Length: 362
Image 1 (cartoon, rainbow, N blue to C red):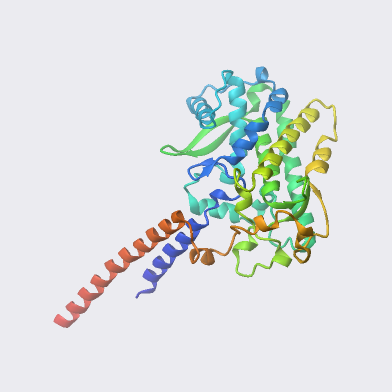
Image 2: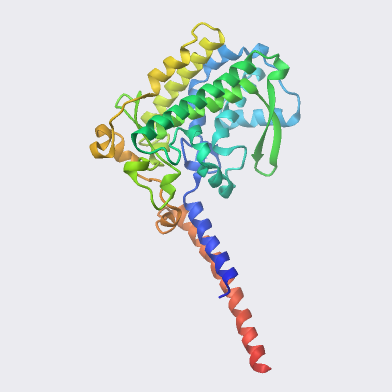
């Protein structure tokens, strides 16, 4: 068979593997076609202190049709009816920010783009995961430092915008909507950046092994290296686990703790905005992002209670996942890819036979 056709067929099988390991479920899931909106659930549980920070009366509503409709759509999607349009706009902006680290404005159906986004090494701090090269125990320390640094940076941006005039607080963002494609609309900038901050803090619960009280990090997991064939747990850290990402199953206690931490985050932002406690973020980190050294694979990560759960549905190399798709949905996607390959093969063989017949006739 000609090389270019073999390449096409191989691409189909790789696509099937990508589909089997869709990144839409990586981290507490976000609302979309294939997820239950865990990040949104956590945030909505905790958002009330944000209204004390934002002062809805000081927020200017955008008057363009896209922004109005998207705000309404988001509120309907979370089942929360807010009569005050200013409060609805703040909450919708917060949730757009919460979704941003996982989608970057792209459609959750755009699986190849999503895969590339989540495999980006410089994207890992947004999810409190190790980067490639953050190895051993020092890798835990570096990953958590990156996580804390990003939280501070996004909070600084949010607080700086909070003191702008109302009309200057609105910023234009882009999001892919079904049937419409990429749509540009306005969000409240401070709420948007606070949402991104909340996402990162929430992911620190699904991407780490934590102490029994869930306040102290004992180990940081790895996504990018786990996709490679040479992943070494002692060096690279435990592979990322999809099981820890599920909001309503075994990981429910993690989601509850993440909601409590998110509420504490909003209260810390309130203290910073009011200039009542300049050390509010340090206190937040001391409460929820402290690190306990000495927890390794050799001692079962200090006999961590979550280790066995974290070893379920771990991220693996793409080709390995292709050969081990187990759920009905995974098998369905794999069958589709194989069907495409069969159709391509059937289209090739007649052409080869026809060419042979023409050659014989001549």
